[in-house]
Image (cartoon, rainbow over all chains, first blue to last red; front, top):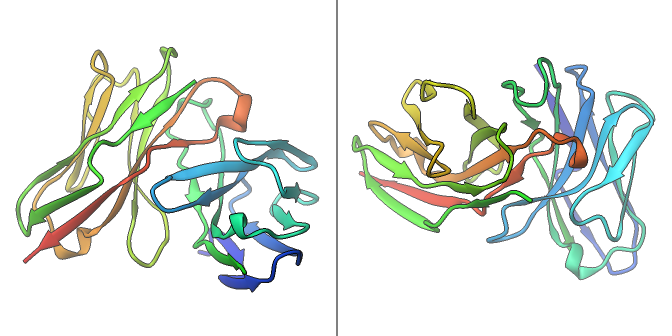
Length: 117
Length: 117
């Protein structure tokens, strides 16, 4: 009953370092998302994917890249980390059975807490 | 563009009492879906309840109910018989009918609920 799995759970980077956040879902969902959560800001969309091999920018994409080479995996990369990227990152996924306005629950991973010094 | 507003940064409620968490939204769409999520101190995002804009009945899920007033554009979460384990952040979110942003959820900034003995 894994659902959405994110690795790592915690990471500390120095400014300028790179890293990749991994997200895997076992629910055969087409749609996957990366959000960031900052204090008092709610969740903001970084990038999303509507299927294997496709990705698109969300609300706050600068400084991030993504890839979806396999349907079950969605990777978020930071090429040159900056202190402004200190945040909690959430991966999420859902299907759209019955269309976008049906009760298609978005399932979240446990989050990755990233600090950039 | 959609906007979700949660006007209560923090709320207190006594155990066994009911509490209402406010959510208003701004959209020009006629069709949309509204979600509530709970985020306990452990950090995960837990789906609570869904309301579709064309649903005639207010949604209920156990102790959670949604007071949906479409004309007022409000979707307040009601928690009955509060328990200590209900202490958490609560997020209201919306999914609209358009495919831009891949039908991602648009979140409010959240309300912190503390249940006291």
